[in-house]
Length: 354
Image 1 (cartoon, one colour):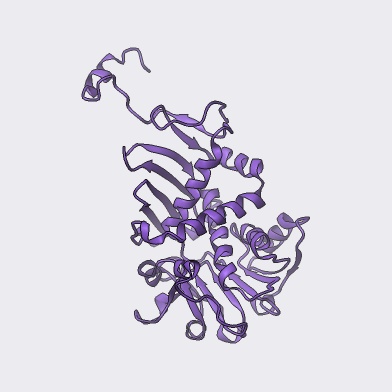
Image 2 (tube, helix red, strand yellow):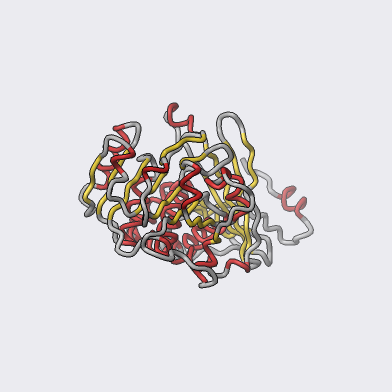
């Protein structure tokens, strides 16, 4: 339940944004505005990339999936996300990805926000894809193929419409029910939607190809002959070791753009390539230190695996937008004894608490 009250104070309590309140925040702001403004936060943080601490995410892999921690700091705020990826969960009626995250004040070490990030990760992944495409997609792109129509597909479609003007969607999923779900959810939002019988059919006439499948395997969602000149590929699904979506030959033809090479070379499509294969860091394109798309005929590839700075941006955006809304709960996470040295005394005097 949402609580009303003043803007959160880091010394009084920790604001917690639950799934219910995150959804309420999306509706309060509107999903179009949310994605557009979140994209601006991400680009602003990428433009100050050198200010951040950076490390590949810390992963615990199993046969069933992966659990990861994704930390970063700009030396004013510290942020991290806990996230899992378990493709098998879908067969058991569970989410493939769940997540939560925290922001903390570097000066005191006190947490200033705790938030669900299952919904928020879907939003930030879509926003990041669209931000990259504003720098890499061919001019005038209006048609996008979306291969893999699960939990991320609608968010991707709306973000690309909001930032690039995509109006035509060509959908394919090995489960036709997923494509029908996607079409149903996007009905009335201004898209011309075609459900295709194969991935080959889906990419016909597409300016942008988004691959966002879930299976943890080295798959060939796109083969080399499916990708013509001038296409931008938004490769989202390959995001851990041993999980890819694109045939290797596509990579050798494309100009490849990544978030953080030490992480992407382990988890992204480029795990298929030699360690010294050239890639361009996306932040350098945003700052003008490197070129993005060089011609209308070039094939561009955003090898997206997700990076901690994007989650940091998303948490910052949420923190800036919950003040005054009441769309958070007050968590009693901070011990506050009268004498900071007398934590035991505080516990000892806390009688009658059950």
